[in-house]
Image (cartoon, rainbow, N blue to C red):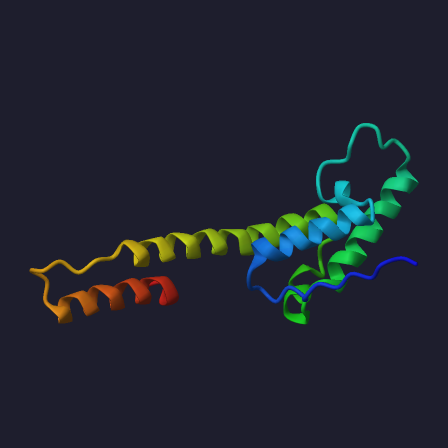
Amino acid sequence: MAAKFEIEKFNGNNFSLWKIKMKTILTKDTCLAAIGERPAEVTDNSKWAKMDRNTIANLHLALADGVLSSIEEKKTAKDIWNHLARLYEARSLHNKKFLKKIYVLRMTESTLVTEHVNNLNTLFSSHFFGL
């Protein structure tokens, strides 16, 4: 009996973990190649088209409605994958840089508490509101 795998539908949060799980599913279904460049050894157009359709189906089923609607115009699995990476990987990197700034932020003895809180508020405002 074949094992059934489910992953939480990607809703725009935690792209890096969803990407790992999705690559695992695509590997299991032997269609991981469809999110990259077409391998030279895949010369059969119908086999490639079938792999692409299978990959698109897997991707569609693993996306929450809000994210799915953002990729409806994309015609290939590679286009979908690249679009999601452009939208959500950059945000993840931005969040990691933000967390690092918070982690290293220290209040010196000569700094007033209100000044430190203002620095913290400025950091949060620039991250969440793009100020």
